[in-house]
Length: 256
Image (cartoon, rainbow, N blue to C red; front, top):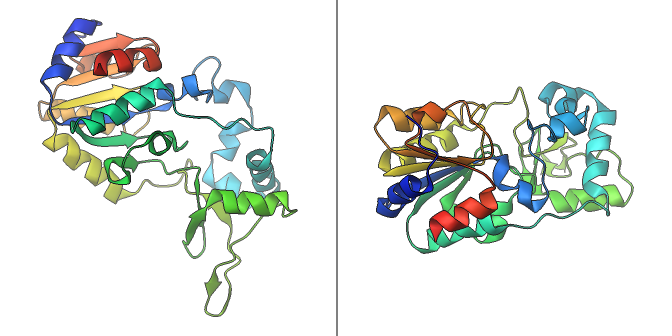
């Protein structure tokens, strides 16, 4: 039975010393980043967003890739910054109670907020890193964006392989539809859930797998679950407590 009750969530939080957090797009909406599936989300506002997020389309359509790079290189594009929700989780880490933060977000805001790299698993990659599809070399996305601003429409990999530039396609390290998640990262997150005494799902609809499988796993092994998000999720029935509202307001209040 789900209790939409702050006091119950707070009791569970207060007694937990090893907390795993699974975060989703809802924690970043107050930083100006729209979610995906909401009525004002990215899928509703941008009809090409779904195609850009599909691996086969990205790899096979040079115009789509060029448009994606132009969006990243647009100087008028707002630069989001961490909000109070992100900072509350940094405080949880500073208190020594954060076992792991597993995020589905690719915006890099958790690390920008000040988390130690070893405490964050970016399950779906990061827009701040770019990877060559041919040789696998990773680099800073901003360096590629500078090349686009200098005139390259569809930049390719410049890493030297066997004495010559690789020339492979570049894409953000973000996981696109049709691209598998890193099994090592998923295993690390699952091991953290096993070692934890509380799982908090924050700002996620829990509709994307395999990330949402961490909640199923926590339930199977008897770990308490608290869900904080705006609106309902597919797994509300597995939670001991559920809070509905703005993450940048709920999370600091809970962590306080």
